Length: 271
Ligand SMILES: Nc1ncnc2c1ncn2[C@@H]1O[C@H](COP(=O)(O)OP(=O)(O)OP(=O)(O)O)[C@@H](O)[C@H]1O
Image (cartoon, rainbow, N blue to C red):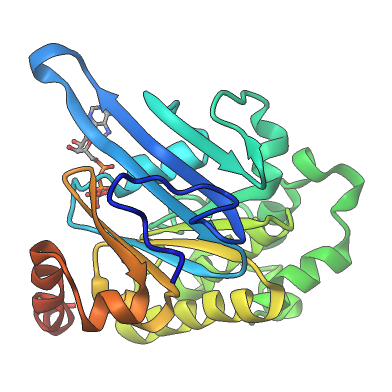
């Protein structure tokens, strides 16, 4: 398939990237200087095709969050190029408009909540970005998209929701923007296995029904099996393997990928 990054890492929005919403070309982020410099993301090239789920997998410290933060424009790139929907956004600084198109959910849905806010009040804060576009109907629809009924959750406080419900509310909050890209950074890591499966189902539903493009970030390649169209494997900031999920999982080419796959039963036993 056309998704495989070439050995030189050249993936373009019209060539190797196919129908790409996002293209990263030689993305690099260095922290610190001289001997202390850390290449957190090192010459990583990829394409995220529309209405597909791409999973970025790698151990702790492999650069997953740094990559996500660059895509979210929370962190400038040191070098390389980021193309979004055909436009070079590498140096773009008007993040307000960008964040309507690119939304994220993170690992700990609890910390994102103000304990004293109901779900209604939490979601209403999106009015700062959406203004009058934020209607009751839009809130109801966003909650429905993640399998929640407005009447059940809008009046509740965070401690009155399960971890899975909290994470679904956070996904609904992201959906209020009607983004083209959703980044889920370890969004299932703090959930037990059954709740994790629910969130993974929400993500595949969003891809299949709403056509959302999703970047799913996890340290657990086992989860990639369930959801991904494409898998990118990061090790020490380098993209060591990428390709269609089935190929990467059932015919891994790189020793590091094989090691991650060998660890899957152990992770699931303890998780
Ligand atoms: N602000 C920073 N300053 C210095 N080094 C950083 C900074 N952020 C990340 N790093 C380093 O960059 C490397 C990649 O970190 P990153 O958090 O992106 O990895 P990760 O794969 O997301 O890890 P985890 O799964 O533990 O979150 C690590 O060596 C980390 O210590």
